[in-house]
Image (cartoon, rainbow over all chains, first blue to last red; front, side, top):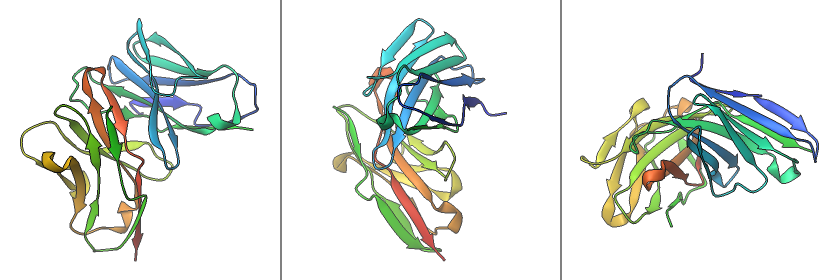
Length: 113
Length: 113
């Protein structure tokens, strides 16, 4: 089983719908991240969390919200999806040391029509 | 502000030829630097990382990268490319105590037979 699991892997929805992307991890890491990938733009940080009570905005948090339900679970919500939120979304975890790398899930491809 | 630039959006090399992917960063302190690879439909896998010490870093799959502080660069190299190396490559810099990684735009590598 993957260490970082994202569900759903693919989702097509309509403008205005509420969407939740879920992430769970078995690595025991406290730090969790949500990134968005768009062609030619690389990965951009949406939100990150150091623990259940510590949630922080990234560079592109507008239109998104998150919930850290437990150390192992970090969900990303789009309250009212719009077409320019069509993208590939990645959840990642990181050990507490700043020198540690990110461990990524396999991604959730979201299409908003 | 921290930033990462990958000047080459797309590179094509012949199988067996050498490869160099460029990465330039902007960061005020000693950077933590990473190279990730993303195969089609997959998440990101760490190739190598630099924190301190020897400026020539060895990674998986025969890749290496050299940190050059004077040039603010962390270029990725491989002496002989294999067809399976075709993928998208991302350079990233660790941004201080937040644990965030800032990613470049990515370079897509195509390998000709």
